[in-house]
Image 1 (cartoon, rainbow over the protein chains, first blue to last red):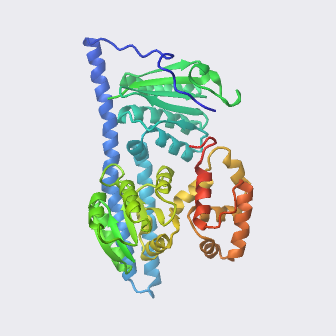
Image 2: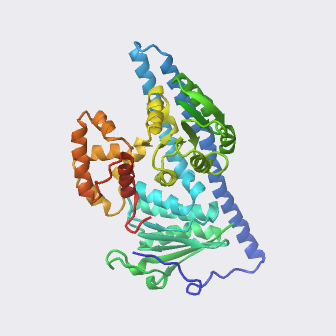
Amino acid sequence: MRLEPAAPGNVPAVPTARPGPASAVAEARRRREREQWQGRRRLERQLHDGAALRASALVLQLGLFRHRVPEAEHELRDAIGVLQDELHAVLQELRDVAGQIYPPLLDEAGLGPALRELAERLDAPLRVRDDGRRFGAAAEGAVYFALADALTADPVSARCVMVAGSEAELVVTVAGAEPGLKELLLDRARPLGGSVRDELCDEVCDVSAPPDEIDGTGTIVARIPCE
Amino acid sequence: MRVALAEDGALFREGLLMLLQAAGHEVVAVAAGGDELLAALASTPCDVAVLDIRMPPEPDGGLVTAERLREKWPNMGLLFLSHYAESHYLMKILDIGTDAIGYRLKEKVGSVEVLTDTLTRIADGEIVIEPVLAKRLVERPRGEKKDEVASLSERELDVLKLMAEGRSNGGIAGQLYVTPKAVEKHIASIFAKLGLHTDETESHRRVLAVLTYLRSQRDGD
């Protein structure tokens, strides 16, 4: 299956509202929403640079301590090893929490790599296409978490994702999307001034997979302005 | 062994320095970032450079620094340490080099024995992959690879996991308490079932074939 980018002419751009009292309110709301995503990213970094690094350093200190214990003291050496394993478990839990706040790979490498890693972890047959372009913490976070929620509930709720867009706007095309995904994407995209619409599959992608694998009617396109 | 170290977290850097010294290694350079390490190593190369992935120059200074080190000293071993074990970074690391290179979780090199074993294998030219990540790759292969991996016997899966960790035949034999000859048989059978070529004689090339196989999508990712 191949998913091709929507040609600029094929998909009309979202109309932008003229500045006015209503749009000022909407803009303030978008700003708050963007700040919330940036706050999430800061929290993850804080966790990484603070608690996680401290716990990792503690594992090394215990290793040094264990090395200084005479070899004959098997019980003590083993006990230190158990403590190190416990700290590994603590760190795994911190990693899980960090992933739910803002996945570090999303921060460092962007939507494409983060979605691939997510699919791998959830064992979801999701195909991801991207060109490595970045769209900011808010737009990337919104799309990531909408897809993460959908795929966690049902690993086949999306089959193919294409990440594209420009400096001003993130455009994500999802083929083989279950109906619930559109709602999840809308919930995340709308507060950022984004939109999600259905697309006729043949307009946006060239699907070579058998029709029973990809339902052509389940193609949606999300557009989210970037900060 | 002559080791250099770059890590921006002071606590972890100090801890690793002390553990390296306790293990009897000569630490020739300690730095808080990639550029600083390159400057320190300008005239004195080392056997293995230990690099944090997420350090200055941001965002992933460890990778940039490794590329520069490899360019200048192609034989220098590289050990990447990270708080996360992600296949995204594994593939980036294997793009930098497929021999004398390793990727491990920070808290998993916390004993003198494991640290020295990891460094020695890298200095000997092997690929060393974090077992947690190798296990995940084998248990969660992509797409249609799943059926092929499911056709392996339990013993073959054990061998495949150890191959994905970068272990040589001798290393796999030691871990599973079997003869190297038996390991060779298992590997031949695994490669046949997965449709991979067995004519690769070098261990690290076979490791690479296995990792690429487990990670790739149908149309190449």
